[in-house]
Length: 457
Image (cartoon, rainbow, N blue to C red):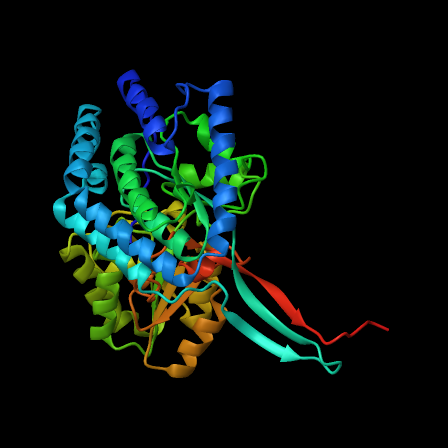
């Protein structure tokens, strides 16, 4: 996935702001005054919230087949608009280069024909998912004859605030629509033209399928005050906020939001190599967990090795990582096995590197590993490598993270890998959604009760 690379947002140049004002009219499908901030922006955002609320009521009653048709139409429209999307993206990329942005940032921002095709395929994968809305998750009959059902319902209006990845526009729109929710998208100023072009294509698909255009709206101005208005709830018209971006963005959303937030602040993920671990498997899992993609939130940031196998497992693991181009920062035991290991500082145990760097430590068995993860982890994703099933079960039970794995890479922390057809983000809180947030997690529930004239004594 994705995902949560640290990326600062910047105020746009006046030329970008002018283009954004033009997009406001195009996106909203109606004439609106230039939006510079203050009262104009507040009115624009408030109107967006009201229209989203109205659209959400329609979507909540839309049959699954109609949503499926709309998603297929949106995917087709994205493919048809590939040239327009690429042209818009070229402008965003040119500006980013002029601003001196780094190669990793440019990679996240840049779209190609293949990436646009993958974006459309992702929308089609969401279309193929079973519709969660209306699903009866549990039912029972009371002694008095009342029949009670717990039924999935949409959340309502979801706000998605993201940074440099324009593909989030289509991913988030598709998942929200599948779950019967209206969505308000606020992308980063660096990708505003690209995201706007993707949004226009997506909405044209909705329109052709007869669904309300206001079901998927895009904040086409780069003014940061728009984020504050979304966090305030848009006059009680916003039900959930999902931030997709760097730590500073997520921290602000979690601090300032007056509506519920699905998010994670850090992905400080661990791989624990137990005394009963197969060394070859441990090497495979650790290397993939750290080095497959270092900039995703599922990348491993800390390696823990049981002291019972430090003599046999530690040196091969450390050498493998360093030879693969990964910097290792270790405690004294780790430093002793390879002179290339740098001393770890206390800060290293609490750092999400999002880079080819890993902290490594020898621990006193399972208890030591669990204690370290509890003290320094972020409740995101943690893995154990062991052939001892009982030890694995203890790890899976005792580690309080959203995702815990046995003999598998932490890089499986991805909604697509879970069979969700994608994700809108990963949540590490303990309320409602936890782990990858897919279509099913973008629903709530209500109780339907069927009686035959019962009254309460």
